[in-house]
Amino acid sequence: MALQNTTTSASIIPSSIKTWLEPNDIWILSQDRVKVPETNLIPSICFYNGTFLPIHAGHISVLEYAKQYINNLGTHELLAAYISPSHSEAVAKKLSPEELIGVGHRLSMIYFAIENLDWVMVDLFQIFQPCKISLTIAMEAFISRVRSQLPNGAQMDVFWLKGEDTLFHTKLYENLIQLGFHTIYVLNRECSEKIINKTDEFKPIQDYHEKRWREIQAISSFPEKLHLVQATRLNISSRTIRACARNTFATRDQLHACIQLDKITTYIIQHQLWSTKPTIMSAPSVFPNGITDLTPEILSSMLSTYSISSVKVNSFRFEQIGVGTGWNGSLYRLNDIQYSPDSTSCLPSSVILKLSTGIWLQRVASIEPDFYSKLAPRISNIEIPKCYYVARHPHSPNESMLLLEDLSIDYDPLGPKESLKDSTIFLLIATIASLHAEFFNHPLLQQDTFAWLPSLNSTLVHYHSEYALKMTDREYTQLLESRVSPKAYAYAKALVTHIPHIFQTLTDEHYTLSHGDFWINNIFVRHNQSHRIRF
Image 1 (spheres, rainbow, N blue to C red):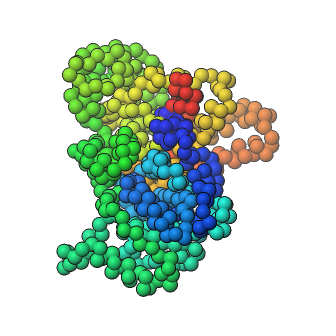
Image 2 (cartoon, rainbow, N blue to C red; image 1 turned 180 degrees about the vertical axis):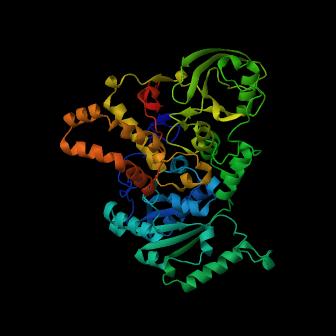
Image 3 (spheres, one colour; image 1 turned 90 degrees about the vertical axis):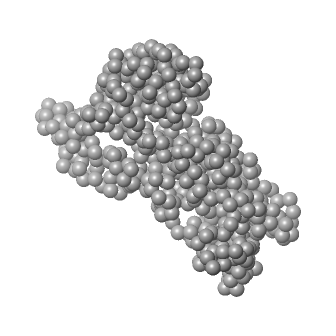
């Protein structure tokens, strides 16, 4: 597994932008892009909330048209805008389980999309709450922070940006307008089919908008704070984008036509978001139990599956780089791979062959294929080695084979722990914590697709029995009693009976994702880039 410092890595988030992994209080509003007032007009900012899954040109259009509208009022000067992504629980209620992705992917795409909008920032208050909060609480907190934190905050007007679909919502949130929000509806796509009366199918879309707009103004207690902006019809939908990304036969041009933001198109393809590519590939005709079973023909078949085109390997060399312990069989580096001239370009010259024997400490430990095929594409803040091929043995499903990216090409071992710099240790801790934060209480982990993930107490049977046996060893307990305080020794004895309860309590209360094996020899540093770490 690979870690990277996404606060400085351009491959995930532009380094010029404050990133979501920085350990700042989510209550604090960013101010690095708030403009200094140039007029005596009323200073204003925008609040734009939503799932943004993914963000697309339609969302950027809402921001741009709102900015133009506010500055053309003649009474206000727009200083900044804040995007507020919804909490994962709120997203889970709107999307199907297979559409859910990690928080990091959502935020990374947002940061890419606003990279060149020097007046737009991200508010992390909603997305990083321990659990979903109501819109009222989120917006009350936002306007409170504006008033107390931003220069001229007490005099600022806040415009709440809404899309075409919200125009037909029955709830107007008058209580929020009373707090001090203006509401701007930016209409930049066609009306939903659910709204259009089938008997009036030839009626212009604008008629539906105008009718609903008159209704809203008539029932609102604050019509002067409601604004309607007609924009260029882009007709872009996040739902359409996700459907296109799931379509195995969709081209890059077709996906880009749905998104109209090049960096977001590239990001989705690079990370295989919403991809319907088979999770576990079919086993080769001859499943290699050892390196002598692997032939150029079998390797060709494996790499062809990854590239989705014909690959022919003429020859390769290999070296054993590790005798497997735990659930691993032997580990090999396949290098000097020679391809036929007509094979696809950009194929690896070196890969790692990893075999799993499937059993470790009397437990089945065959989840690695599921990790690489099902979970890895949804993780954003840890850089996962490319998996060129993954399959289980056709007659022994606990045994598996992985063909992985060779990290030695771009990375060096971290080295002995005595030589580690403080900055490297802090980076490791922050990156591990960011993995926990990205999936903390995330609904994704509760889906049946990830039932194979071991819970915290999955190791309980083994370690509890080991510990209980150790505490019956009189020589050991006498040594322990002589080395620790009486209170610590009492706790050590009590753990024998309380371990199951402790583990179960931790498992029931909260959940997140953890790598589980932070052994120092698993960690590598990119050549000449101490901020890029893999393990």
